[in-house]
Length: 288
Ligand code: FES
Image 1 (cartoon, rainbow, N blue to C red):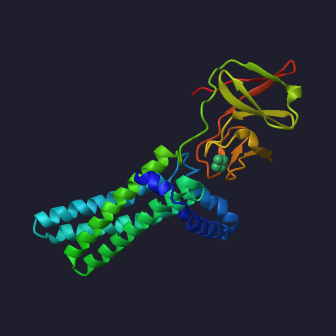
Image 2: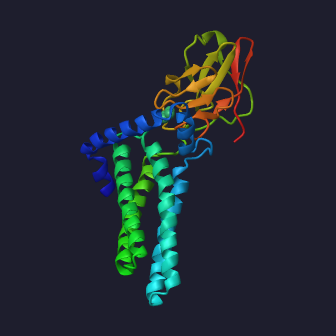
């Protein structure tokens, strides 16, 4: 219910677009390094979104702080436990920089309801991080009770925000590979007369699996029917210098291997071997 309520708040679109423009400007200011930085933050190099992995650091550190605070109260304020709790909180604060940078970079390519949900998720994380920073500072000044209460409040907000993060992934498929079914039949299948490939992408089904054929000079390229990032239809894309380009957010894939050359996609595009026999294009699946 909370999730649906957030998703329907259209007034969130205005701050979302402002923030998106700031992010676009910041990335553009990096010039030729833009793609390298964006790919690093998306997790393109890892083949998996980086953000979920990095969120484990601040969340785990906050959990550790809470456990050490509880142990410190039970042991009537053992100084080593209080010191350890402050160190754990400091580690979490450092880790939250990476989690925020990767989350913002991924969020930039969401739309409508998922974008509103992501904005609230990020705002809650920013609030929780501010409380952790305040708690860390209070701990340094010996105001332990106030500091413990502040970080406990931050932890409650982190849990609420984690719920929204889960809804983004499991409800909206943010970061999930959306390329769909892949063709696995190992035999060559004749699918289309080569003369029918006239420069446009051709969409067809082989063994119940959608594929798209492109002609790139003498080569015929066969790929899955959806782009992995957000499931854009493959036949809306185009080929540019041996790269398949997705029109929605500009991901680029190797024509030969489907490997991601530029994010936001992190999962490879399914591509299939092709050959031409007796004027027909033949395609075969790849082992899963
Ligand atoms: S759907 Fe986002 S890059 Fe293609």
